[in-house]
Length: 157
Image 1 (cartoon, rainbow, N blue to C red):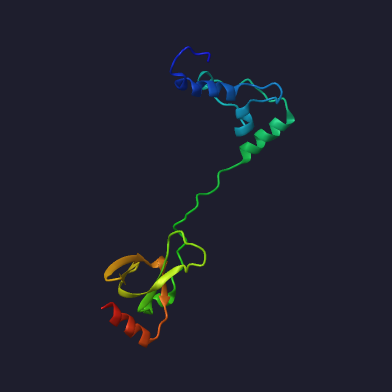
Image 2: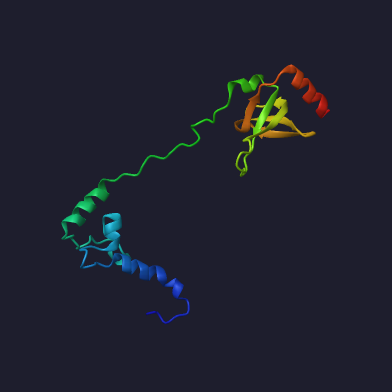
């Protein structure tokens, strides 16, 4: 409101910076000092040390605490490998995990499907009448008898 302009949103970051860096008498520090543990260096103070010294004991302790905080190490999410059943290499048929929102009491895997070709990261599975590439982390080996496997392949052809 203090700027007489229609583009007040351009001045908003500067106004907010001023509000966050202003010393508050009742708490004995500025809001930025409470959050970051130190006063903000404003453009006019970049090369001059701040003359402000905190008076409140809480603020002094908080500043020391914030100075001792170090960032956490980066998490390496790619290190963990998904569980892949070791019997998947020997299977002739697999169940495919359903990766969509399911209603209550619906099975998490679809019917057994025939494996056409195996690759290290995915398998080529015969779904319906066409081959589909599916990631190994969505597959679970199906243990079926030979009679059932023969009838499944004869029905699909």
